Length: 149
Image (cartoon, rainbow, N blue to C red; front, side, top):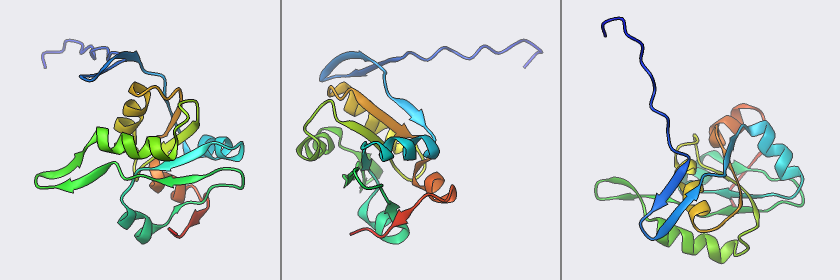
């Protein structure tokens, strides 16, 4: 660096999937406190972690009136973690067929959930909020955790 200024390239708000047209990014990344407030009003919680993670650490305990769904997004493959978005989306659509369902989506730390939220939006889901700090942030903030059933 020779003392010049660095300008970060502006990231496009557009999401592109080869099978779907471009769509404007709508989902918002939210902290655990905001997620809890949404869940208190009946939003669904979509946990995309592996069941082993839920068994080891527990799951988000949703308030009465909300529902918890576990649909694993990223699975261990021959070269590490893989995300078969089409197969995952089929399973999500079987559990949450209403494209206007209000969904808070979360993983362990807020990385996998961003990719999954983009897939939901590309599929036409219009009310998606992503848990930015993930289950780890949820638990560290003192929000309720339950055993995986």
